[in-house]
Length: 68
Image: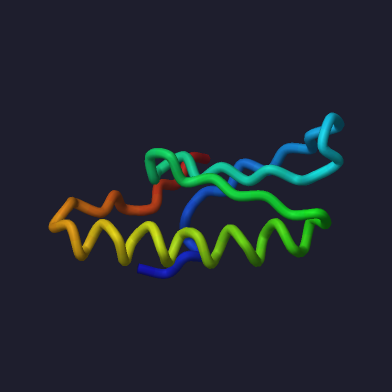
């Protein structure tokens, strides 16, 4: 699975001055960064970790989705 293919919801959190990234296809998969670029980089890493953990646990891994 390519982490780039998963949806990324990126939101600005004014309370903490960070970008928050949620991966809708992967339950509970969320991260953040001080900059937009850092948030995206962290998101790609957390997607890989989420998939790795699911594989180890024998859990199904949702496919990336596409909405037009």
